[in-house]
Length: 125
Image (cartoon, rainbow, N blue to C red; front, side, top):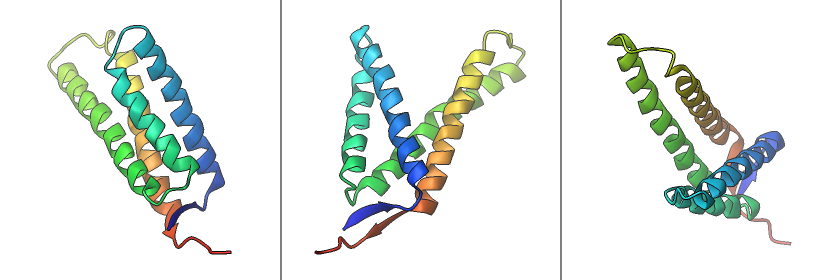
């Protein structure tokens, strides 16, 4: 069994996105934030599954996208609660925009993974 990506643009953009955040997290690890090592390992595993079109790639992308939505989603809720209590909005705008972008990317990856990625039997030549 193998993973088949019906939408080539989604496949390419997903690989580019994972490479970009892999570079960022590698920089974070080099600069001393060793918690980024967890993200680096996950991103390398995702790239391995994607490049080999492994049968677990669809499920791995699915769970990764959910994690990408949960973290920023909770942060967005927390920031909205802080704004509702009257905290200063100027300090939170950049962080809120960043979390909204990450949540949106996670949502798009989840949607396109669900609609355009399929598992099928490997063709024997």
